[in-house]
Image 1 (tube, rainbow, N blue to C red):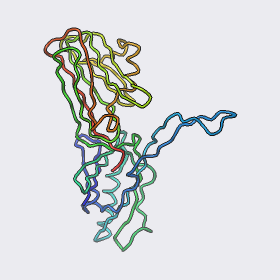
Image 2 (tube, rainbow, N blue to C red):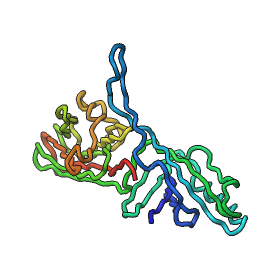
Image 3 (cartoon, rainbow, N blue to C red):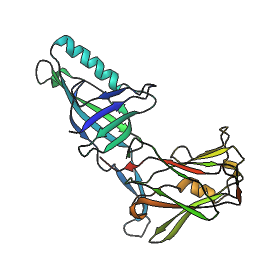
Image 4 (cartoon, rainbow, N blue to C red):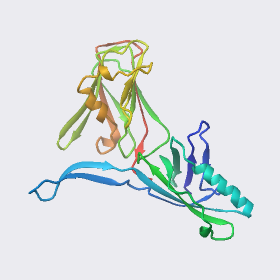
Length: 285
C-alpha cells in the first residue's frame, strides 16, 4: 500500500504519516500527473493561426482528501489540533513524500493554500471526519529525495565524463569545480532535429584550495567561490548562455539519460576535480 507523508521545514525535519491512521487516513491525492502546460503562441495580422514559440509549465496544485476517526468528542478536538499543526504554513515549503506501491519514492515541495477546514457537515458518523487540504507546488516537478553526485578527476585535457541521469524531466544541477586549475572550460552538446545546441562555460583561473560553485537552479543562477563571493563578472559573454540553459537531460535527449560532459584545462594540480550534484526529477507520480 502506498504511503503519504508530510515533512516540515524545521530543524528536526518533523515527519507525519498522513495515511496510516496515526493522525489520519488517505483517501485520494489529485493533481499527481502532468502539470499544467501552456503553449506560447504569437498571432499576426493577415496570417492564419499563430506561431508556436514554445511552452511554459505552470505551478502545480494538489488536493489531498483525508479522513480520521475519533472515539470521543475530546479525542476529535485533539486530532483537529494535530491536523492544523501538520499543515500550518511556513516560509519554506513542506515536503509531500509519496512511497508508491512499486517501492519508488517521489517527493515535491508544497505550501498549504486556501482554507483548511474540518467542517462538521462532513462528519460521516458522530466522530468520523472527512476533510480536504489544498497544496501548491511553485516548482511543479516531483523528485527522488536522495541527492545524487557524480565526481570526476580529470587526468588529461580534452576529457569526457558521463552523468547518468534517471529522471523523466530535466534537472538544473549544482556543479563544484576545485582548484587549482587554469584555462578551465566545460560544455554539454545536445543534438536536436534543427542542429546541435552547445552550452559551454569558460572561466578564469581557480586558485589552489578554492572551489567555485555553479548553482544552475531556477531562481539562483550564481557562481561563487568558497568565501561566497560572486564570480559572475569573470564569465565570458558566451558563458552566460550556459548559465541560463546548462542542465541534465533525460532520455530521449540522451540515450538512457547518459549526459556526456566535456572539459579542457591548461594546467592543474592534484586537487582539481569536478562534482555534479542533482536530483532525479519526474513529471508525475
